[in-house]
Length: 328
Image 1 (cartoon, helix red, strand yellow):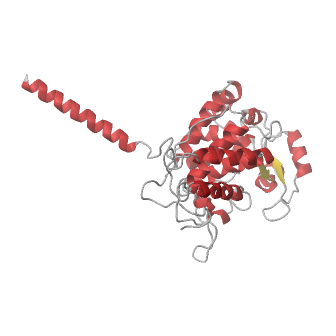
Image 2 (image 1 turned 45 degrees about the horizontal axis):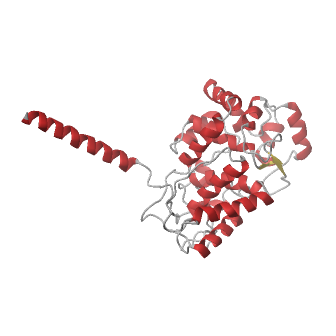
Image 3 (image 1 turned 180 degrees about the vertical axis):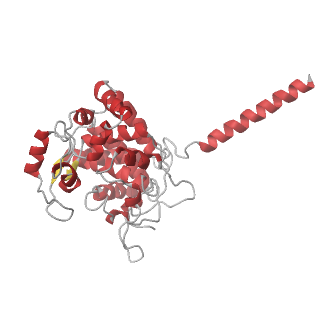
């Protein structure tokens, strides 16, 4: 009897240790983190985003892209927002993957100003980016993409232009390079395919696709190619004559599954978009997203939360910036 009791005790202790280990591995972020600290925080963000998107749907696309560009470099810590200073003259926002194409900085400023007026020193810039991207997804999808995003991120104090080029692969990338860039951040092949669906909104500079999609032989649809050649100069280059075009000409302002239909019909801008058809696994995922109602929206919600948890700073790490453009 004593031996049985001892064995039971060992099993109970082992179970408790396993539970503790699981809890330690769980995300330190929390849904409703600001419930007591700043109850109106998420409502303030959503109010500003609704107004901004009603004026220009591109504002929503910009904030969804900003979350990706922030989280893949130094983790989701708002390092992408920092302006140059004499101490740090070349921050991330001046790096080629971000400059001049990344937008939305003034919108983040407006949200931060509103939150500082309501709850000074409480809401991090990193959480503002995450909330903004979540709200943009909901608004632009007409409520079909609707999810809670955990919060509690803190803001980083380091930002260097050399970092984005290491982790943000260009739109000329093949499937292998795309997958590798996601895996190194804890994301998988399906996350890549699902998050690529955000290319159903927003605009792109011509220089991002003209050299490898229009100036050489590619698999881009002939009709789309002709249209794009009418919009984009053959010598389009960053900083030069470099207009922008819609990424999805069918439903340009709707966050929907149209992107996957575009991939299948080869009416997408980037080599990285077309690359999703270059493996049997990813091509099957593209077809599922295109054909099964609600399939993409459900997975996009989960992938956004997953991405928004990359290498976050919490607790005593980082800081809560007073101004999103500068460390305290």
